[in-house]
Length: 118
Image (cartoon, rainbow, N blue to C red; front, side, top):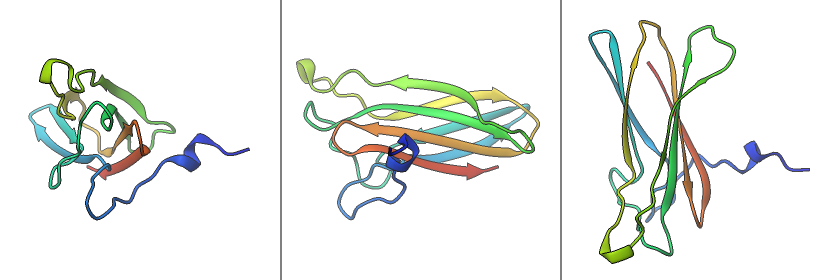
């Protein structure tokens, strides 16, 4: 039996971007995390082909498991010519180093992941 983790992809194709790009910066006691799909080359984001959601996690250094920071659903895929842009921002309070993870879901091409050590 195949595990769901075996279906998660991490490498992009030449003309389409699916891997979430992560940026993180310290702002005082807060860590500001930004994730997006299609930073350099935009994802099509049409009714037929779109990013459905992005999930963010943070795993503090030394922790056994990552903690879910946020789950962001994108619902506008062309209704009344309204399209969602898959970009999110989350603020967390931490003074720990660790790893930020982002997972995105494309309705045609499945699950995509990326991580950033901070």
